[in-house]
Image (cartoon, rainbow, N blue to C red):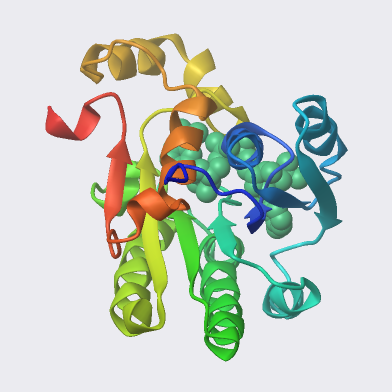
Length: 248
Ligand code: NAP
């Protein structure tokens, strides 16, 4: 019997794959047998090289998801896509009274609008082919909590959880599963300011039952699982990978 956790021969697009969580997910999918299209605003050559080193297959794709036209078209440029991981995201930290309309639009375009457009294009292709597919969206603890000083980000990540559920409802019958991962505090560029702030860093660590920041590879294993046959009956779920933060 074949291993239900393997995804050999599947083709996966991972956005924001040049660094952080996206890079770890790209490696995690490749380790389990997928061919990865590593997409980013900057070159993903480092990710492609790291995948080659472990004997996997990957290629890079440069695109700017802040441009809705590129977001709408990217899936169509890729032949036979089985797995879509919407990981790219940005954050703007500013008191809500000072958060500008431009900050709001920038965050929503990348974190929510691009996710909508990529999921829609992916589903259209998968339905036309008739062989289903897997979507994994990267949500956040701020898909559930309000957070502080990040109104655009919080709104976008609540939106990601909502889109995950509506798409799951509409597309399950076509064999497309749609799930999200809500990472806790993961040590990446995105959280560099928080890690560097002694007080916030201490407060965060005190609240995490696991007692440590998450590693991007903590997220990669869950993404690979959700993309695998083993997770075939999971859809519409938003899975916390947070060292216990939300249980506290
Ligand atoms: P990161 O290190 O800042 O990486 C973000 C990735 O998104 C980068 O590859 C970035 O490319 C890419 N990206 C940003 N804007 C883009 C655009 N317009 N077009 C294409 N790619 C773009 O952040 P991370 O921590 O790995 O975050 C990855 C995801 O996890 C995000 O959705 C984030 O909201 C989510 N998340 C992170 C945490 C955490 O604690 N780290 C917690 C919850 C959720 P560049 O390098 O070129 O900017």
